[in-house]
Length: 99
Image (cartoon, rainbow, N blue to C red; front, side):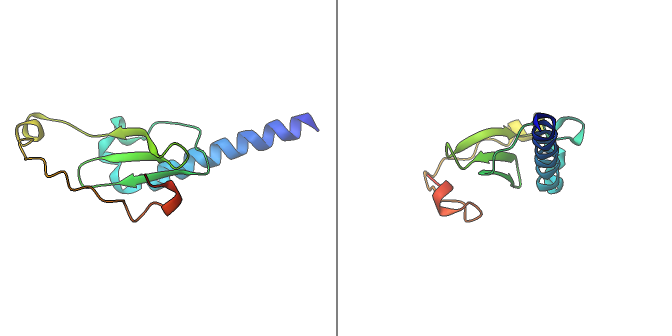
């Protein structure tokens, strides 16, 4: 009986890891070797792709688990945009997961 529980837990971890890779399929360019990090996902975690970065968001802590951004000389030189302080919740997150 104990072996079945361990096997099931391992299956959930593998499925969760694959789910993260699937969610980041549109923005693999931000990760080393085009592979997102292997992490044990929680049910409330959400992978999000943006134009300039990728983020794994925790619905539990309402904070990023990790953020990935590819920097190069051109992107750093172009980082002179003025801050607007206009923040808004991401509509892709459940209301309960937002700050």
